[in-house]
Length: 456
Ligand code: NAD
Image (cartoon, rainbow, N blue to C red; front, side, top):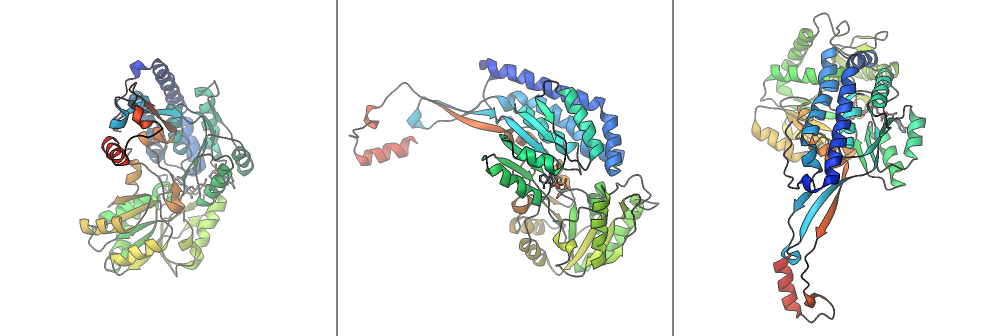
């Protein structure tokens, strides 16, 4: 991870900050050490909750936490130092600074699909920025939540970070309590509940929400590579990823080749079938299994479609929706079904996307730079990956978040520290006093205008 410092303050001149840097570093180190101690238990809890293959659990839930802690510790001093900014001539020889100060007490509410990473990654930024934290992990990924609670209790015996477990009732209780900032990851509907509750105390919020992330496939494309990369993005965690490609808008000229390649890729990923594979996650619970399989009632299945209720597994399934008004085309699928919509040209795809709520992610597969630029410039989304899926999420220098229905606010990398910091503006002023600026104003207006324009 590369944080560009750009911060010019010198913390040696601030003994209070120097002491705080030490304290926060030791909290981050304690968190890392404790997660390492519980790594095996976390992996087995993730397997119990979601059947997560070890490789997927490591690269999406555990390793990013270690990396984030390491880089946050490295750049903490820079991030905490007051940032010197210039002052206009009018205030000469004044000095001005932006002081990052903690908000105070942060509430982090996390979902079940990446229960570990989506609890700890925001937590790292919140404690690095000096806040106290209450974490409310999901009740649905209960095995992971139990280990998260153990880790927090052990890493922070002083209760500077605490865990509150429970479901709707307990979260509602928390939302009725005053916090200084609420960081919520979850569905758009619950996001609205959170924002309403926050408004009572004018509590600032970050809402990391979901929605339907489209994937456009142009006719000028490496179809084999596109099929592999889309299948990977959709099959990872069995489609239970906020930025999974939700549906395809595919040029009619390449549709049939794509279907063939997609089927080949799935067979190569899971030679004995996805349901049998240990490298393919399960659906979180029976409610979601039923929700996803019910979508199959309104569609034509192109490939896949098998499912096993006992093991809560659903094959990666390509489908043709009969129209745009059926549930699978209105709701976030959050499972391994991939609807295909045929398009005649790129303008049709752009029109479709702009007619629907702004997505969290947008994927573009094309060999033509002019086509990707056109789509980027004529649509709005939280983020975009060109010729792959999920990739913009991984780059710590690209702040991650949604827009409109897919969320408010962005984090990752140094943005997480900034998100959890209030930047206090501080102006030191000069000893020189220009008498003419005080009443009674004797200065002629035309000179006042000139001086103002010159000196500000
Ligand atoms: P959810 O909104 O049902 O639950 C999220 C959290 O809110 C949980 O901790 C839950 O206990 C709590 N909650 C649920 N109902 C509540 C209510 N009525 N009042 C108060 N609190 C309530 O979301 P989920 O099912 O856990 O996660 C799936 C959703 O999260 C999907 O929409 C997905 O796209 C989204 N998501 C977004 C991101 C992102 O980074 N943008 C990441 C992961 C998941």
